[in-house]
Amino acid sequence: MLNRKFADLRHAQDLDPRVLRYEAAALPQAVVAIGPGGRPKTKGGLVLAEPGFTWALFFFPRRWYTITTAYDRRGSLVAHHVDLCVPPEECEGMLSFVDLKLDLLIRADGGAAWLDHDDYRVEVDAGTIPPAWQQAVAETMAVIDRERGTGAFPPPAVARYRPFV
Image 1 (tube, rainbow, N blue to C red):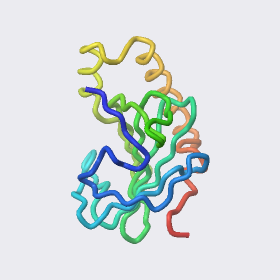
Image 2: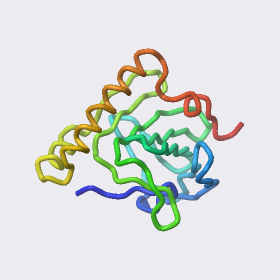
Image 3: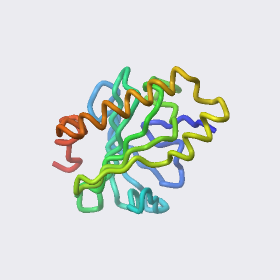
Image 4: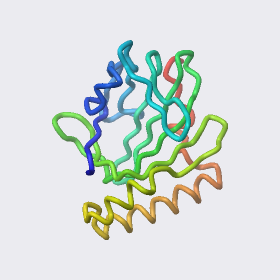
């Protein structure tokens, strides 16, 4: 089942999210601390969240992806987590997106992997991801892969951002 994710992480209460900053017109739009009651979250074999981690969330208008950049307790980059999604919009007073299940994980060392193909395929087979969205996903994946090959992805605003500078 497709779900909506919010910039303030209200959809992920198990992370005990604490909004440090939210500004819809800025990049990143939200900076959220994983609170002391947060449960660890692992993706692609990498710990992306545990108490003391900070996430910067980047929403791009008209793009079929968002990027959540995870930093450890020391402020060191852990990874960029790219959600393929319906272009972000405001919902309930907060930027949000419908997650299409397919993700790209870019580790701090630059290694990357597309994840959750099976989850995406289940949604396609169930009819929850219409053909037009499937086409947008395929085109977005191709653009991201091409830009990663030239060093242009993640975008400079994402690559340069540090939460505690």
